[in-house]
Length: 153
Image 1 (cartoon, rainbow, N blue to C red):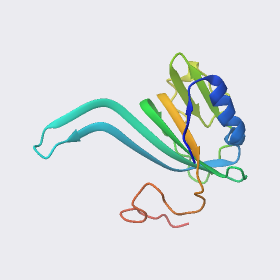
Image 2 (image 1 turned 60 degrees about the vertical axis):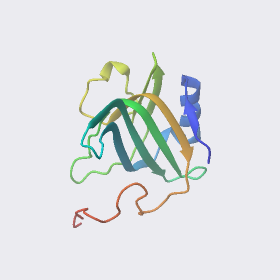
Image 3 (image 1 turned 135 degrees about the horizontal axis):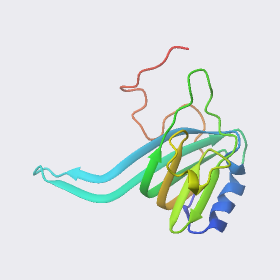
Image 4 (image 1 turned 135 degrees about the vertical axis):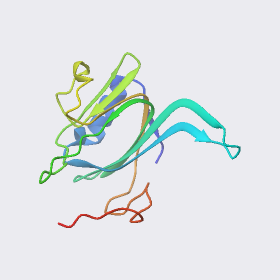
């Protein structure tokens, strides 16, 4: 599926419509990478360019899964659900304002709450998304089970 770029609030609203406002969805996986690396000559290269790739799955069809790539991430605040609570997203917010894009799994989230650390949210300069056919337990971004500690439930 082709990537669609979010450039305006109308684009954001269209994504929210396609994915049902993220109702009954979950973050399956996320992968963050930076613009920093070390060359073989051990020289540090630093580019202010953080990216976040997120796979969402939901309990509806057309589509059941989407992938978002946030580019030039200015903040990624992840707050896991407390013990014995689920992480089901009931509704989300996607706002395009003043050259920034904000996403949060909180439906009444506003820019005024930008420095609030009690819930998950992302702010970035660019966002693109696409439909994917990636349901199930299989990991798409990470190493699978290598190095992952499994919890007993």
